[in-house]
Image (cartoon, rainbow, N blue to C red; front, side, top):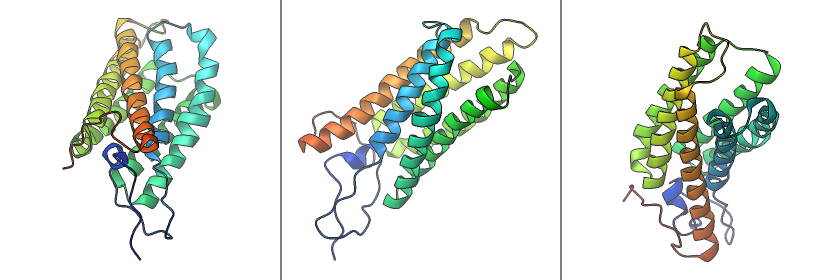
Length: 214
C-alpha cells in the first residue's frame, strides 16, 4: 500500500515522512497548531515584558493561555508529530508545551520564585533553544528566524532577571527589550502557522516558508 503524501509545502514547516495510513486518508499536519499555540502565548507574555500591558492586569490571562493553549495544545501537537515521524517537530513542540505548563506551575502553584531562580530557569531554556536553532538549519527559513529570535529573547530575559536580584523591581530595560524580541518571535511563529494552513487549504504555495531541506 502506498503511503499518503502531505499537502503542498506542509513539510517545509515541519518536515517529516508521511506515515502509512489507510488509502484515501491523509493525516493533518500538527505543525501549524504547535506554532500558533506557541505564538499566542509568547505574544501575551511579551506584551507584559515589554510593559505594554500592566503585569497586575495581564498575568492571569497569560497563565490561563499558557496552560491550555501554549501548554496542553502544543504538547498534543508534539505528540502528534511523533506519529508523523518528525523528530524535530516532536521535540520542539513537546518541549515548549512543557515549558508553558511549567510557567503556569511556577507562578500559579509553587508560589513566588526569586529573580536568580527564574534567571537560571531561563538560561536552561536558552541553551535548549540554541540547540534547536542549530537543528532548524535543515528545516525552513521561517523556523530559523523563529528560533533565532527566541534565543535572543531568552538571553535578554535571563540577563534582565539576574540583574534584578536584590531589588524590589519587577522589570528593567533588558527585560523590556526581551519583550520586544518576544513579540517579533510571536509574529514569525504566527506567519509560519498561517503559511502552513493557507498553503494546504489553497493547494498551492500561497505564502513562502523558504525550505532549507532540499
